[in-house]
Image 1 (cartoon, rainbow, N blue to C red):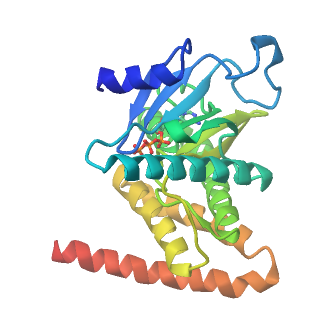
Image 2: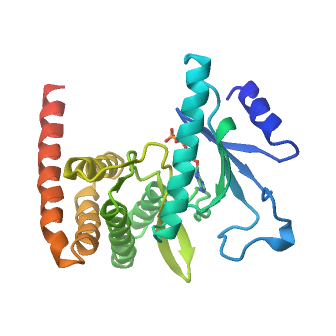
Length: 271
Ligand SMILES: Nc1ncnc2c1ncn2[C@@H]1O[C@H](COP(=O)(O)OP(=O)(O)OP(=O)(O)O)[C@@H](O)[C@H]1O
């Protein structure tokens, strides 16, 4: 991680403690303990972790023309923030937007997730790995673990269907971009990273979203992925077909998913 990037972020966030937790292709993600405009005693009660916040910073890209880069940073940051606030109003599980500085590429949002017993953050991927390991170590735990995995994956499918019913596609649905929250003793999945999201009513785009997650689960959890994907699609179908006139649209997405899978298989056969 370039210290120049951190220094630049810090120059826009004077006096705010920043701890780098991830650097992706688009953005650097910081953890901070400070709310941008409320004192510790005023933290809103509906925030999951009142002592932790996420700051997502899109640094300038030296390979882009400076003016174009500024425009792109501003519009992508604003689009992601707008989407977070829309998802909140639609009750689709996603981090709550706290503050936005679009010209500098900064989004301040709610911190989600918790530490699993093995010390890893509770992404869907880490949680499944953690349970799979526990099951290998203790085969009597199998049924209880399967039950909780089924519940969570059905909820994941339902969350994706809610998003798709609003004609929003995520664009980068992997099991790392799904964080689990502990709410009233239950695990609730939340979608994160809407940097590549877009509005689309096309069955093809929705099917690609599902396929990307299916592939992510297949590559990271090869032994159980078939069952995981079945549970996920069960939740997706349940929510998508909730209204009778959606059944036809669901069938369209499901058919498209078959096509996308076929194209994926052909591509991997051809190398
Ligand atoms: N709201 C959040 N709460 C907790 N952790 C978060 C949150 N948002 C992001 N993270 C952490 O930061 C990581 C990167 O975030 P995000 O995927 O939004 O950034 P990105 O730059 O688009 O990453 P990538 O290019 O790797 O997809 C996530 O995998 C997660 O571990």
